[in-house]
Structure formats: structure tokens, C-alpha cells
Amino acid sequence: MSSLQAEIEARLAAVEPQVEVLLVEVMGGETLRLFIDHPDGVSLGLCERVTHELAEVRERYALEVSSPGTRRPLTKPEHFRRFLGRRAKVRLRDGREGHKSFTGELVGATESEVTIAAATGVIAIPYADIHRSNLVEE
Image 1 (tube, rainbow, N blue to C red):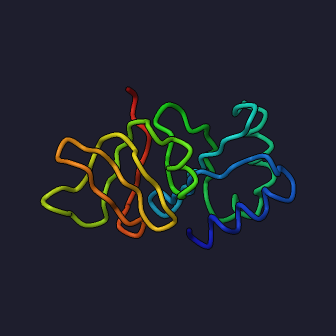
Image 2 (image 1 turned 180 degrees about the vertical axis):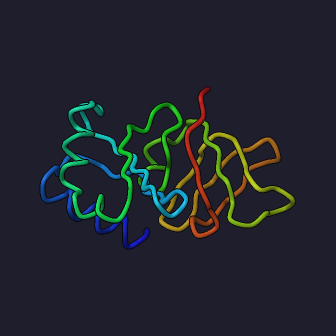
């Protein structure tokens, strides 16, 4: 997890404790895209409150706050565990066995790796090797 994501999670935990920060990505060095979730769903009002609470971040970046949508990002072991049995696409930092990504059913998730049943077989991927991953529609 980046220090920026840790900073945002700490700030939101104090004022919006039910907001889960799914992914923080800096786009082009100027825009920060923040994907959030909430047990009651993500509304425009919630996005506005989160944007307001991150005033110090808005001084450094143009801030986009969004719901995860159907292609929900998976960034932490608990995200992968929560969606075992669902299909996901996992893109790697470097190619593995000639592949840059794997798409398949999430079949396992420990603290150190995720296991996916892809068309090429069942493969365990350490989280450190993952560039980006998200759910895919069934």
C-alpha cells in the first residue's frame, strides 16, 4: 500500500469510518483517482463528503472519487477472500509464463498470494507481483 493511500485511509477512518478505500491511483502525476465503498453503497453525497474531507489532497491533485462499479478493484487480501468464487482479471507487473494477465475464478487467497483458476490452469500469484486486479462480469 502506498503512503498516499495510508494517509487517505487514516483521514477517512477518523471522519467516515465505514468508508473502505479500495484503490488510490495517481494518473499522469496530476489527478488522483480514489475508489471507495460503503456498506450502504456509494452515493453522490458520500463522494462529496469524502472529497470535502480530503482538502489537503486536493491541494496536490485534482481529485476524482468514485464507486467501484462492476469492475471492482481488488487490492488487499481481504478483497480477494471476500470474492472467492467470482471471476477476476489479474494483471502482473512483469510477465509470467508468457502471460501479462490471467482471468479466471478466484479459488484461494492467503496473506501472501491469490490463487486463480485460469484457462491455462490454476496459478498462485504473490500480491507483490500484481500490478492491478479487478472483478470481471460473469
